[in-house]
Length: 313
Image (tube, rainbow, N blue to C red; front, side, top):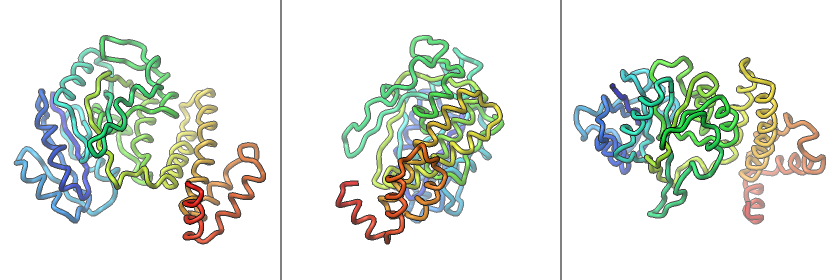
């Protein structure tokens, strides 16, 4: 069974080698490794090419991770497409364990696994699955292999444990494309869309190590929250939702809107905050807080950021 591996990258000359090496070290060899360089200005391409002919490098102008992943999906020839971010690392048995799960649950269209997160030699998160929101959604368990039913979709709205570097997707699925106009939440948007239509399975083992870098998206919460809002607003347009699912999405959407306003304000993104603020119903945000947020949004960017820093925001 041929596995295509897609590795999007941008200025990762110092990390891309570790990612590629972890793919080549798999106990079950993959069929192809596709590195999509998203307009790097360092030696990322040179490092990737140094790994030989079994690594195919595609180059494009900088367009974002979603675009790079989609380029890889379009090129992939495998029955399954697996993703690995260029600063992450697979454990040697990752693909073998996921193929075991696909054999146990042949109806599964997406198979993911647990991950850990490290930074500067320290373990920041030993297990993402242990954070909750996953166990109990399975309809069948066979050892460390889990098969999920419709309940997973609703849980993923608030507690998604599906991480892109841990995912293996059956090739050719309808709708298998990352939205390129959603930054930072494009993977969540895709997995939610697929979870509503297809069957997910998982391996309850830590088979991926994620490395938190200084340029990770966690430092731009305002933009990330705004894109979360966009994901949920689009999700509400789905005609396949149940009344319960729609109600749950609306509740989470209001929380994310309030969060988007706050995190935009403390980063001096006043115009963006006001745009979200207009869509929050009166019952979801008190009158005084709304007035305070609206007034704060007109402060000059530097002053707003300075006040937020003094308040420890």
